[in-house]
Image (cartoon, rainbow, N blue to C red):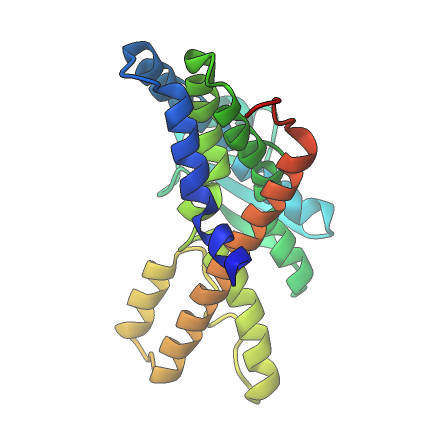
Length: 242
């Protein structure tokens, strides 16, 4: 139980430890560094995140025909390199044209691949910031760079992680309920899907299914963060006396 509580509180503790290292006292330079590095990291990470969705599908045997990316994230330039990129999206980016050939493994890989960066880069960088107390500006820069990547799973709680949860829950439901449509609960936008079901032919069974998928998605978020912590222990050396 203690380990579970530690894991649940780890994201907040890692963030506050980084803030304490960046702000031994009020420092305008640290505040500017955090905001500037956060903005730069977000702008770079978003298109990479979306491209990794596409390649998660392609590398595991699926097909991609359309990846929408908003213009402010360099979609026009990316389109000259990746033929499946389309300029413009209702979101920062969205994979709208892809075929997993009905394979849940390919579908899960499509959703999950971008979050490998959370494990390998985001969480280790976030946890490393706490050890820069003697260099607050460096700690601030590391914190700003890390946040969009480290906390991407939490940002995607009703998006990619709900979708991963829905893949698992809907497949289980298909084993228990004859004729169940596995696509019914699958979406990368929980709120949009819930609205469509509630205004259509949604049932109490749908509400249970969506809730379970959301809960599984939350569990997967913490599994991802735990993997990031394990990676940080391998990559980040704790200074003596820290």
